[in-house]
Image 1: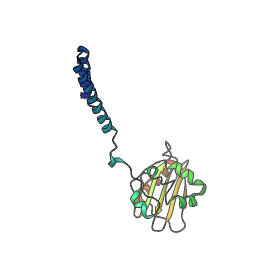
Image 2: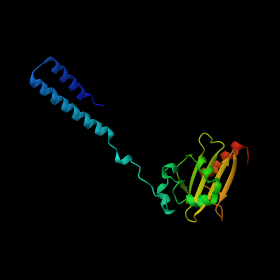
Image 3: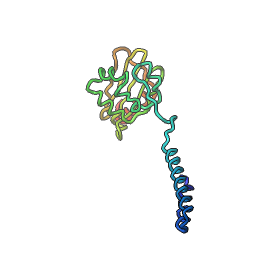
Length: 183
């Protein structure tokens, strides 16, 4: 913060205290006006919003639009609330949908490998036991979801051939199996 206007005000006020001249009062008033203007300009600059840092909404309402969401976090995208994935995931998971959402509260960004979108995550403070992943193939509009509950994996798959799991998901599955002592 620039303190120059405040120093000028202090100087003007101390000069005014030493003198009773009407001209000095006018000088003090002018100094006060200058300081007020400088302070207002400084406050406006400090409160200005940098337009380059403002998040623009990303469309996740169609399979094709998901490409523009890669690298962004599900919570910022409202991916589990209002996206092309919600209806098919709810149909697949039924009563387990809320468990899935709870287990990806702490997650990486939406990622893509080999044409398959994916997210991995875990329940806050429960990374070794309550976790989940989601795979989505836009070409076939098929989904796979894995949910760990107390170290046990429940897998849900759309009908048809299994999706190819991205490397990060395979690593997560291996790590979770090691942590739970299952193979």
